[in-house]
Image (cartoon, rainbow, N blue to C red; front, side, top):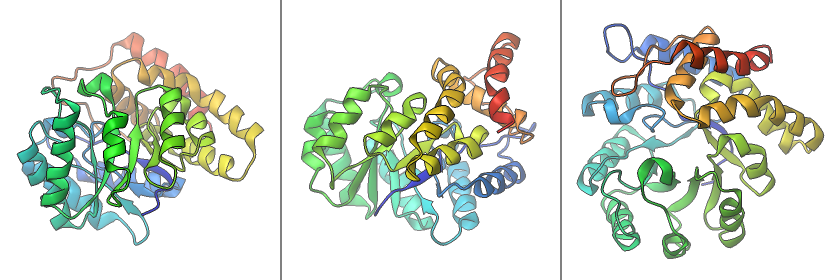
Length: 292
């Protein structure tokens, strides 16, 4: 399975009643499709899966599956704190029609690498899906080591790794070691162009919720070979991307959607609202993107 293009790690809109707002989600997804995204990644950390009930997670997966057109990539976020729950979430996604899932290390437990290898093996044994690993040690408290990737390098169902550590050196190492085996997927948004240069043909991208045209244009421009223009685009995107990486990531993306005329509500607790100063800083960085 070849991953390509910009695939938004979808936000989950919430209405004033606190429930999932599927009308807002549909409007957002039409906007993203018009911008040129190649697929959909619901129920990741940007989608606040941690705050959703199992019923809500199923409803979101079903809605996205029903919305998707043939040829659009579908990757379900099925993370949970325990292996048993991950298997339940993954089986649910498979039942709905997802053949691929995105899985970070289970949060809080900080498993060893051998425990993490067993975790992924157990999930793959239990459910017939493809796996995209998700490396984000700053959030999960646990890394995905080269020992683990070596273990799965020849497993055809471990198709890629979304690399969100922020380390370009690590991304280069992954691209070099696992070429033709584990696909490097861009996940460090403020160095996305560097990832593309080192072989990442796909980008699972939270910021594309609020800057889809710019992200898709960057991807298309790079693939067309216009490096000078791609560099200028990345310069324009960098400030907003960097502010996102500095904290309150999901809140800022949801505020960015509001700036685009696509309100998606507030985040659920424990995530709190942005301050006026945080809004002003991000709004200023978004200005050239809003006028893209």
